[in-house]
Image (cartoon, rainbow, N blue to C red; front, side, top):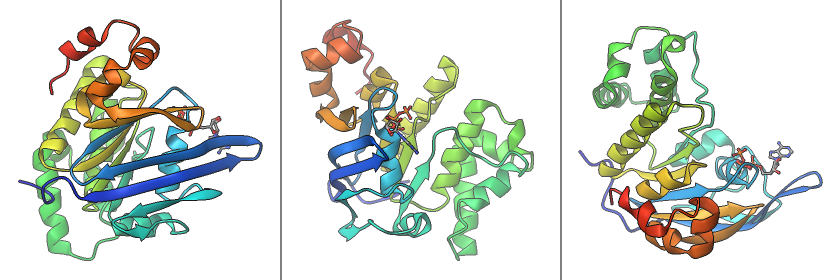
Length: 256
Ligand code: ATP
């Protein structure tokens, strides 16, 4: 099963993005792009500007300068729902599922913008097979799921809008190491299906093992960018973000 055509075609382009919150310059000229079929990482410490970048892309933060285009149409000024209709689905930090609703009701909410009941049912079946725990717990309250399962539900719900680009904001946040590994394995499976993704993470090492390319944000600006291998090999980056363990050591746990 492939969700989309082969990789390579330009998809999202962010140019010279500036965002201010009062006196704080949260983004100071961020530019990045994502090609179809790529997984691109956006990494950086707390406060670097990762969530502000995602918020700008999905229309909940208003940039003061710059441009954002998706498949050649500008996203600037569009409401979040219109941006989801264009084919971008966010999985926001903190999971934000509806705990009092069932797993199935949460999944269906992801398809709220769609009007094709047969296609929605097809996708429910597809994603419940892909995430078996969601199928097993379909009629149970989402609030009873573990943290890792809730993260899978949040990702499944986003997939229900049939996005062409998935934005994952810190999917490993607050999860125990074993669950972090499970969530990353799942992202790897989505990559195999051909899903294009922007992966926002503080977990630099695991992110570099997963992505094709990455951007390192620091105080609202892109400090480094390159392929995962190029970033690992950059001495300053390696020293500051990979704990100085050596590029070779970082590469040994890389599956790709
Ligand atoms: P984290 O990993 O903690 O989410 P981040 O890299 O996503 O960090 P942002 O949340 O984008 O960083 O924050 C960038 C800067 O903008 C920080 O200085 C932050 O304090 C500030 N900021 C973010 N949102 C707001 C807001 N709504 N009001 C005021 N300042 C904000």
